[in-house]
Image 1 (tube, rainbow, N blue to C red):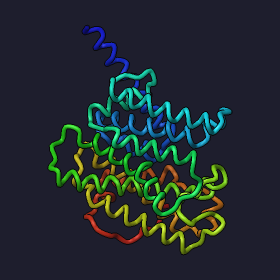
Image 2: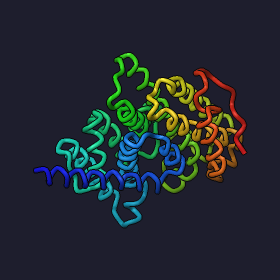
Image 3: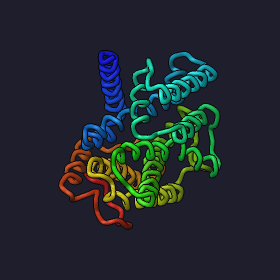
Length: 304
């Protein structure tokens, strides 16, 4: 029996390592921020990211590039969700990414109340090309806010918090997830429309995108970032700097979008250069950026 337990532990360790490879392969900004997590938290967050990344790839073109029909892509997503739920129940999957996530979910209390809305939003990407205000709100909750809540479960694992404080942290996590998603939508507006045929923001497309729409969308993102920033100091020390850095990297991207004229934004994909990311990381580590007192702050000029 001891050998069986050791075999499962070895398998889980390998699965968690594989999730780290997925994160580092697909995300430079979040991957950089994750280096600041304590080891145990980082492994758990890696497993969450890997699961949502693989699901996202199913609906974002990898399956079609492999020659699968839309119906087959849907079946792949359904099977991925079913295997995830099975593993969350049994504690085992032959899929390393799913196994790592299930191990984290069982430890931290991530349940189907969070995974099912996520997969519902992924399924919407296969069925819906435009959004109404109501469907956009639902989509952002499932695709991003619940991911923030999953990560928060990892952050608070083993940490005693009151129900009131947990609710406050959950609001911040939802706002941060929403901000990340909306910034990505804004940055990828033209690519999503031309490559995937999707328009996420209700009533917004590259054909009618103008400065007024950009300013309106950024104001909503600024609100999300302000709300998430308000709880940063209340997070455990095991994750506080990492979350602050992730927020600052996306805030920097938002500022670069802000100073880019709307016509240019739909012709080129805006990014934050690696030297600038490292400069921001140094500022967060030395307390010069990221953990300022809560409240609105003036827009930054994008770092050079």
